[in-house]
Amino acid sequence: MVDVQTPSAATARFERSFIGALLNGDTRATDSELRAADFTDALCTRVFGAALTLEARGQACDLVTVTAFCPDLDAGVLVELAQEAAPIASLAAQHARSIREAAQRRAVRDAALSLAKDAADPEKPLCELLDSTRARLDTLAGTLPSGGAVSGVDALCGFYEDLSSGPVEPVTRFGFSRIDDALTIAGGKLIVIGARPSVGKSALLLHLALNAIDAGRRVLLVSLEMSATEVIGRMVSRKSGIPAGRISNRNLSDDELGRVAESFSLLPGDRFCIGTQAQTPRDVRREALRMRANGGLDLIVMDYLQLMTPGQKAGNRTEAVGIISRGLKLLAMELGVPVLTASQLSRASERNDAPRLSDLRESGSIEQDADAVLLLHAPDEKEKPTRQLILAKNRQGRCGGIDLLFDGSRMLFSEKSERG
Image (cartoon, rainbow, N blue to C red; front, side, top):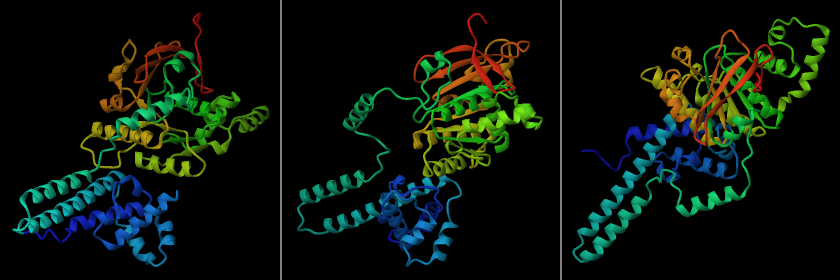
């Protein structure tokens, strides 16, 4: 027979794993829907209570801040606790749910024991006993997590407040009127640009990132294809008009060196960060939170989706890509900033007609998770500067496409006139 009064070894592991993740800065106490009383381990209870206090003050909770906040706790013990952290953020969230459920089961047990004691009292009226039982069960049901549900009154008030605040200001624009009129890049949207290799999807992401920087936004650029030096080289090429190949080869005249130097003033370094080591959505989240804490964050640009790893076990590549796309969408919603990423298209898109949503490589989850999907297409290989940009999915409104001219050597896109 299981002793329901003794917390299980699994519950203890879950508690220490979650608190370890908290000390590593991988999760937040206020996001967990837990209370300090939900923990059975006294050290975990103390650390969680400290985390709630720190977060309420607007401070980050990690090993350093908790050690300073609780000077009576042994720093070595806290370090050991941090080493027991869940290896990925999704596991920390899963462990929080397990802790919450274990606490609720203990509450049910306590209520049942109390009710059994009352039921054994012959002087307690049956109607009072039933009313007491119902009240306790209702109270317990009310402690279950809501799942983030918002009351109708709050939802209506929030909608009216948003509506009366004026038009939504895009974080960045394409600069192509027909696309910008249909798609607003703002809020917690996941926007995917799909293309075959060498068509210009990375250049289009850079185009959007630079437009955001020019508009005074703060941008996190994550590239798994290029080093920070290569990314800067492309940015300088766009601003100076000097071909990117000449910049990468360091084959510049004195005049071109002067133009490169002048372009630096057009690239305010305090408005963007470049990450090249963020392999998983969790890694991107860490970089994003760090940038947000150090001045703010308006946009995340990730190049590109299929180069990422899920950070957790996946049955196959399709499932892995689905985990990645869902992780990026959840990140956009959590931080309230748009996430722009690129995706490879399958070889099927190389047929004579334009690419389709079904051509997104390896996962239908990309199409499902994305708020908007744009497909960049080179319709005629003989006419290399010509591109088609197709807004193939748009939760916000209408779809459609435009013809563009692409100067790949300078990373420049421009809208093609009707005269061609």
